[in-house]
Figure 1 (tube, rainbow, N blue to C red):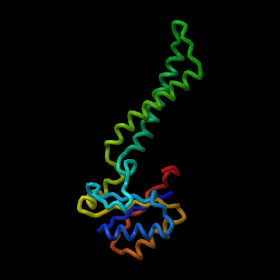
Figure 2 (figure 1 turned 180 degrees about the vertical axis):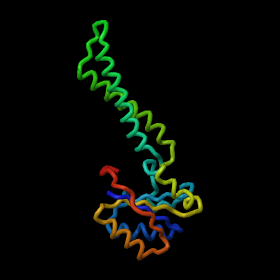
Figure 3 (figure 1 turned 120 degrees about the horizontal axis):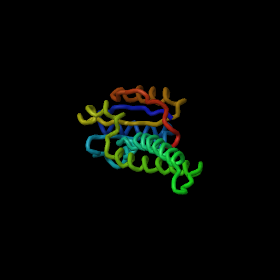
Figure 4 (figure 1 turned 30 degrees about the vertical axis):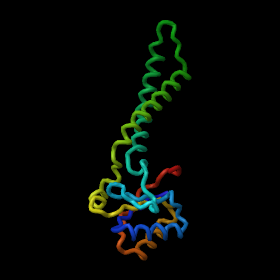
Length: 169
């Protein structure tokens, strides 16, 4: 999946683009609209917490750091076995997984409150009253969707394509 960004000047234009994307068989769950103060009509697919916050990158960092810390703690426990405490490979794995889980949980709680850093370049336009339409499409359809929006809506400004997304969002 690829993520496309378009800045759109009005709700009417955004609604028209969303309808055309639906006709082009782009599911509504793959469209996300970001607006100033989240004052969107109900018929537009509003961006959710995953698109508006740094939750996912924070969780990824938390798993990495927590898992690394857990692995280090497990190896230390294995190296300094005292008082009859026997630590084997399963215990090291369990400590590593626990560290990753705790790290992901803590980092995710922090990431929810941090605005999405990938949206930072668009914030001046959003604060000026424009809408940001984020569309997730298959790599093979990127050019088709970009051309369709450019041809039918010259008022929409194309802001490029983000690198490949994981399959699950």
